[in-house]
Image 1 (tube, rainbow, N blue to C red):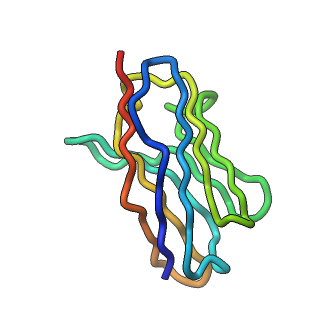
Image 2: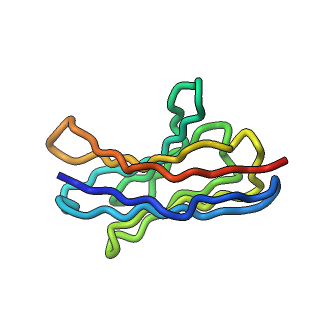
Image 3: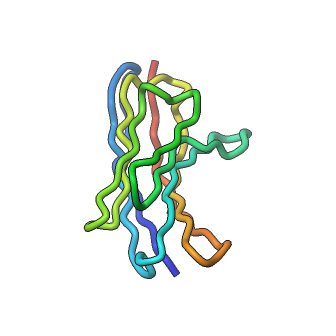
Length: 118
């Protein structure tokens, strides 16, 4: 089992920046990939970015490419999401997600709210 705790959400004006963090604990030795998703009321959950736990491969939704950067600190079992040039449409609750080796089960954090004002 893995526990995830997100932090760093808040209110920011359009064009501003925020950085989110997600710290994992528990069975962290089996982490394969960590992802960020977001959800707004009335919409489906949307993939934002992901990063493999080894190597340098990262993934981004088209809507955030060039503005968001996902990174990790393996020693701290933490994944980050640096969000620049924020837009009002980035307003959402952002969730951290972890995929483990050897199992199809994944885990989710409790979410952190990002509110971008126009």
